Amino acid sequence: MVRNILFSEEKCSGCCTCMLTCSFTYHKVFSLDMSRVKISRDEKNGRFKAFFTSECTRCGVCVKSCFFNALKIEEV
Image (cartoon, rainbow, N blue to C red; front, side):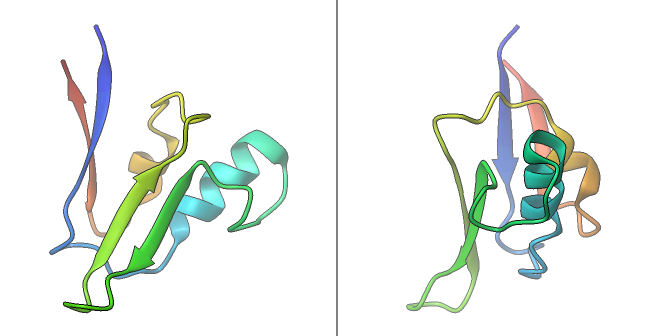
């Protein structure tokens, strides 16, 4: 099974907890730059968007850390 991570821009608050959890899990530091998931604000509509780097393994640690349920694992 392949895992995909779905992102809900309506639910995202932009807190970046997912990014910090990812960087700590893989690099043992809290660093937005070292995260494999990137959250940014769309300047056009003010909502947040997510991007997953090529290093992302879809492990789901970001999903588990999201307080707002903006991330969800989908088994494909």
